Length: 383
Ligand SMILES: [Zn+2]
Image 1: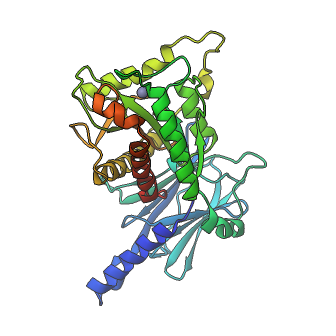
Image 2 (image 1 turned 60 degrees about the vertical axis):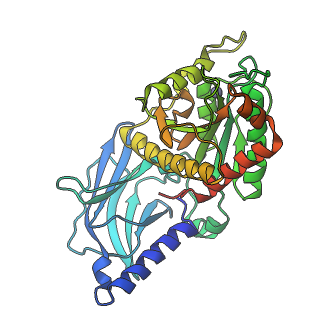
């Protein structure tokens, strides 16, 4: 878990506000611990649930054989006995008050890896439950266990977020083709490369799923996001519409059910990239497809939508034409099926003569790249 300056600023901002508005009731805003419990999930996952009276602001650290969840502005609950089920990695749980922060210290039977964001979730109150911070984890692989607490603290300021940039189509799959012969695969690769350069310059760690005119299956692209342990996955595309007058960008996130018929058609068209037969290319191994738990799906979808909304906002603020419709749509895009939050960006319509010209122009490509860079910088990478 990474702790950004942004999270700290948010917490500080909240405290300042609480104190300014309620000078005598500053402590009324303090969070309190309700319950702590563990559970066992499919795949031998340990689930830690921390229930609090208000939405928790937290950070994680991983000293040897421990997981420490630090909750900001929270009081310890001395009378609380954690409910621990057998068979999980958690042997015992203690609390430690450090100033206004509460540490929930889980003593583990085995070391663990740094927990990916997709396995951490804040649930809002429902029925008998208050806010719940839900964390799923498994035993770490030898040699790749999370850094110790000291190393973690040292590395916070220099830690880079990883972005995987996916230029759609490639090789035998040209994607859509404009009236003047502009191929989607060429345009999106040019934008992807520019985006990589700018994001690298801004301090992000980036990878391209393809850097040349090569064909990749959709699941292979998603798998690159997984293998690089990306924090964000961006799939770049350009659109085509039977109506040549249709213009504008559109942004999509993954959902098994499409938000509208048009979104479903687009997903069908983009998913058809996998149906292109390339001789000598082996069927993609089903085993490496990621099985997502309901919790992960929910967390990844929430983060993806948050990014996508921010991205649409940046595109609009830079006066890039938007396709009529909602800011963010959802559809079952195979390339987005992973534990990495992300979005599919249709940068414009190659079927429209004006936009075909724009999409090949360096200045418009730069404008698109600048909007995306802004959206990545504005995205809150921490839950
Ligand atoms: Zn496409």
